[in-house]
Image (tube, rainbow, N blue to C red; front, side, top):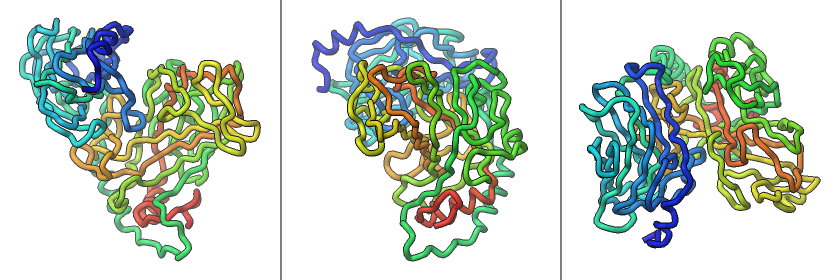
Amino acid sequence: MRKSPFLRSLLAATLVASVTVIAAATPAQAVTRTVQAESYAAQSGVVLEQTGDSGGGQNASYLANGDWMRYDNVDLGAAGNLVVQARVASVPGGGTVELRTGSATGPLLTTFTVTGTGGWQTWATLSNTVASHPTGAQTVFAVLRNGGGDFVNINWFSFGDGTPGGPGWVDLDQAAWQQQLAQFNAIPNRTIPPNAVRVPEFNATCSYSHSKPDDPIVFPNMPGASHMHSFLGNPSTNAATTTQTLLQNAGTTCRPGQDLSAYWIPSLTDRGQVIEPNDVVVYYGSRLPDPTATKPFPQGFRYIAGDARRQVPTPAGSVNAFYCAGPGGEIGRSADGNWPICAPTANLMFQLVFPDCWDGIHLDSPSHKEHVAYTYNGVCSGQFPVAIPSVSFLIAYPTSGSSQGFTLASGMASSMHGDAWMAWDNAALGQRVKNCVVQNAKCNSAGNY
């Protein structure tokens, strides 16, 4: 057992957190509402931990018989089919997750049967369709059942009517995509020089462009609705941004100039002073043992890594944390322990890694993460069969910090996140994916070895 009875009783008094629900303007519309496992209003026997995938947030971990979580105001939508999903990971399996409404013993909504997924951080998405269910906002309980012992981790639940193309889902133009793939497949392989570094990688090196309290992915056409962001790449990016505006406003702070994409991160403040990054190197690579199946991004693809809502301490050694790079490195921690203090000769850094597997159907999704996934076993398969370049932001700030620490526009250090809206010249992107990633050769910003 991972949790003692004392720990179970102690954890039953955890603080209340609100459920994050992504809903439509009217219940009758197609929509998927995603509820993070850690967003319970009450629980018994639950321990939270960081998921192994960057940007995956937290998961309710090592759940056993009798553990439960309560979620308030979960919108189950209108009458009709309800598709309920749960993202789970399990080593032993051999149990069930019951979703009930009203109380832990209330009417059964659906039951997920959990079998082993291959690891406590090897995730699978289970899906059930419910024909009859309560409508509108409901209190939903997740109740764990098995013969004894920890048997499952849970990352999130989702509730929708199963209709594609609902609010938040942006469908791929399949004809345009097939044309882009045909052009990509026709690109001949370049000859790899014998001195090339055999790493599947190219990059765009981008400088700071501008700041706005806008987020065209999360709050489209809602200027000022977001916290402050520092934008890189396309200087036209604002709340009204579309793929067309990015391509029509052919400017960029990135090298190469064929990358007209928009990238953004929450603004960083040091003792009241905004610190903009020196440079952000946007690496495009592959974490797959065999990168030859990697495809370029379709035009207009967008997604998010990290979680702006995550507000937890990040002491030294935390996963996905800020760090120091350069001579002298880290020389201390802020008074609250959440930020490194760098030597005067070093800079504050962060590396943000995006998902690298795609469903091949959608350019975006309601949570801006549901159409993508991180690979854990070195392949892209199942719901996310298409390998896309593994993108990471390597962010360097011209500051060392102090004992007072820093503040992100989104809050604590743990809320670091990034957005990407792809608007490359198709030929330039295709050549780099083919010559550098598929052929396993390190290229520079110009796409050369």
